[in-house]
Image (tube, rainbow, N blue to C red):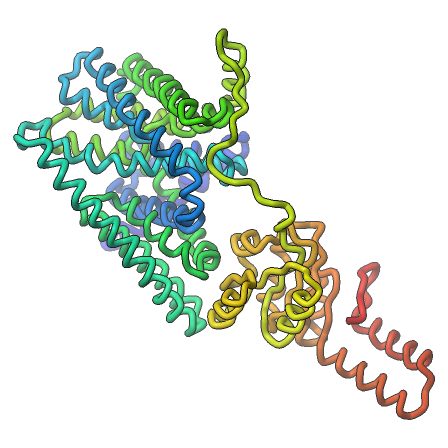
Amino acid sequence: MEEYRLIVDLVIALGAALLGGAVAQRFGQPVLIGYIIAGILIGPNTPGLVADIANVETLAGLGVAFLMFTIGVELSFSELRHVRRVAIMTGGIQIPLTIVAGWVAGLAIGWSWQAAAVLGGCFAISSTIVLLKLAASRGEANSPHARTALGIGIVQDLALVPIIAVLPVLTGDSDDILLSLAQSLGIAAIALILVIVVGTKLAPKVLYAVARFESRELFLVAIVFIALGTALLSELAGLSLALGAFLAGLVVSESEFDSHVLSEVIPLRDLFATLFFVSVGMLLEPWFVIDNIRMVLGLLATLVIGKLLITGGALLAAGANYRTSTSTAALLAQMGEFSFVLASLGLADGIIDREQYGLILAVASASILISPTLLGVSPALVSLSQRLPGVKWKEAAEVGGEPVDAGEANQVVLCGYGRVGAVLGDVLAGNEYPYTVIEINPVTTRELREVGVRAYYGDAGSDALLIRAGVREASVLVVTVSDLLASRAAVRRARALNPAITIITRAISRNDVQVLMDAGADEVIQPEFEAGLECVDHMLGTLGMSADQIAMIVAARRRSLYEDGDRPFSIP
């Protein structure tokens, strides 16, 4: 069985995650709590079925990389600029103050100043994957506090570079801290410039060349290659794997393929991100926590309260209001995935011992475990802050994004821009109706963008792509693609996303009409049948039949195909 060990571990981890997530959902809790508890149960520190943590952590690393990649794709450079000022200012205050708070806490429990410094570094780093999962589960992924928290999280990831550079100094292996820092920061700066400058030029060209093959498999391979390749180069350059994946996503976000990339990567992201939370649970030692419960709770309280106060205060200083400040601070009040990395490096360098390492892991895991609860009580914390003496409620502008102008919401979404779609587009443009196009041909989407049409490359059956195209705000969706499976998927997903939208679709054969009606289409048009009726109209008119008689015959023939109970049909 050894040759299948990776597969066995994957099956064990996913099975446990499925069970744990289902139980958590059943009791109204976020699924990530179920994943962590599942990890505890299959970890090496509890009896029963055990998975190899090294294999699970390797797969979990892919989850972190894909998550950060999709974040980059969703954000783009232009959107990131909205949170740049507040993220840098807040991170610049929060990181050093949190390091000091952790350092003081370490000294208070009798650790050496070097070990306490490692604890402070672990305290300073929050979990990007946790905050995004929490925000998404509450439907707040695009909220000001989620965007702001993400910006601060990125600043924290960047700060990890100098923090790691200082570790050799704490062991006495380096005599010149400034030289060590300068070397690490220099390498990081060069890597960032190369990724951004070279990537923005190269990645869109690679994706365009691959997209022209119109092969979904090749396109997916190209996406994974770009995401993991950039992440690996970032790791080799001294930056983190996650930061490299995020930069790769930012690069892709500037291309016309961003929405399709997102729809392809999301399933991979969700699968491997699940394993990250399972791996967190596997690291936790329940008996160690029980034996050191007072120490764990004391450090946990210091971490959470300290981060809430420091991050919230820094955000207020940066101009955010109390609601945004409190919610953002709650999202960032845990230790992150890179805290585990930092603790592991500290253990390997001999700065902390095994017991101190176990304590850091216990506090980090517990902080992640209570994160959903903490975010849930953040509205109560906002109300409490209003009642504090001397605190004036501040209605400053929200930080982290600009509201969408309702007037820009697209009234029509066209899925497919072949001959039929082009006619519809011309009519809409001629009558000044705004519209968006989803098209699988990269040449067509590029040409449309060049003339100012909002066009997205990809499969219209993807929720991510339909949302990006504005289906939730649109009043009409017209599906003109010739593939029945693609049409049915687009109709079903659009109906689920916007029950009020009017959906008009094209059927290739008569048998497809009922299938598309059942999928949720309001009106289905079968082109060949309509062409036949048009010929009937002209033919009977030439033979001398009156217009009223012709209209009755055509209407009867049309009902024979389209009529289905109370469903409406129309004459195009």
